[in-house]
Length: 375
Image (cartoon, rainbow, N blue to C red):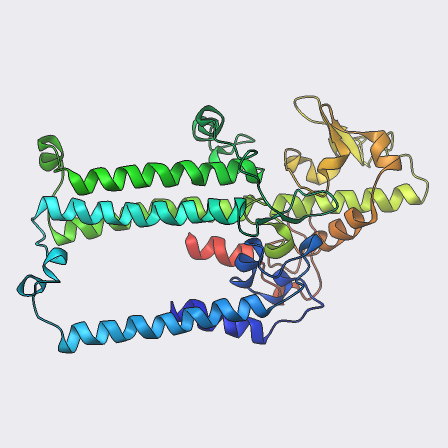
C-alpha cells in the first residue's frame, strides 16, 4: 500500500505532459489512466488531480495498516482466542474448517474486487477503450452491452495458448473483458460462501497436507502460475493494456513500421499493391498462410496482430487496398510512426525487423518492466 501510494506520487512528480506515459517509464499511472481517471480522447491525460488523490489515499491507508500491525505485535493479545472479539479470527494450521473458511473469505474479497471493476465500467465513469472510434476514448460500457453469455466467454478458455488462438490473452474488446469480471466475481462470491459454510470432504482431506509449509507451497505455486499468465498478458494484449499508456507490443511495433513505410512510399507515388522487394517477394502487401492480405516484408511473421490503429483498414479478407489508398487518417499515421520507434525491445539495433531509436538503450517499455517482473 505504501509502495503504491509513494510510487504514484514519485511518478506524478516526474510527469511531463508533452510525452506519452510509456516514454517516461511509468508503470502505475498507466493503470490509473486505463481506469479512465483523468483520461481524454486518444489517451491524452487531461487532469492529474485524480492521480494525486488516489496516491495520497494509499499513503494514508498504509499508515493506518501499519498502526494496526504495531498494535497487534506489541500491545495486542498473544492469542486471539483469548479475547471475545478476536476469537472468530483464531485458527490452528490443522483446523481444516477454519483454514477453508479463510480461503472462502479471500475468494469473497476477490469476487468483490472483480465486481467493482464491472460496476466502475458500467456505472461510474467507464474505462478507457483503445478501440473507440477516432483513436481511443473513455467509454461507459452499458450493462446491456456487456457480454454475459457464458458460452461466448468460455470460448476464450477453450482456445489454444499458442499461435493466433491466444487463450484468454486474445481478448480484444471491453464488453468481453467486463463480462468476464462479472462472472468471475459471481463465481468467487459463490465459492467463498460455500467454503465458509462447509467442511472439506474426506477425499480432499486425504489429498492435501494440512500444515503451514504446505499452505505456503500451494500459495506460491498458484502465484507462479498467475505470474506467468500476467507476464504474457501484459506483453501481448493491447486491450486491457492499451498501447497509448503502456507502449506498443512487439508485433504491433513491427507492423507499425511496415505501415509507416507503406504510407511514406505511397505518397511518393509507389504502387504498393504490386511492388516487389529484392527477393521478388511482395514488398508492401502479400498473402498470409490463410489467404488474407497482410503487410509484407520481414514483419509478415506478425500478420495476425490486432492493433486498433490498423483495424479500420481491414475487412474479412485482410487489408483493403482501396482503404489504404484513400482512407488512412492522420492519427493512424502519427500513432504508427510513434509505435515504430518505441518497440518493447530495449536494443540499439534493429530487432525483429523493428528499427529502434538511437538512444533507445535508455528507453525501456512499461511492457518490458511488467512482463519481466511478473515472469
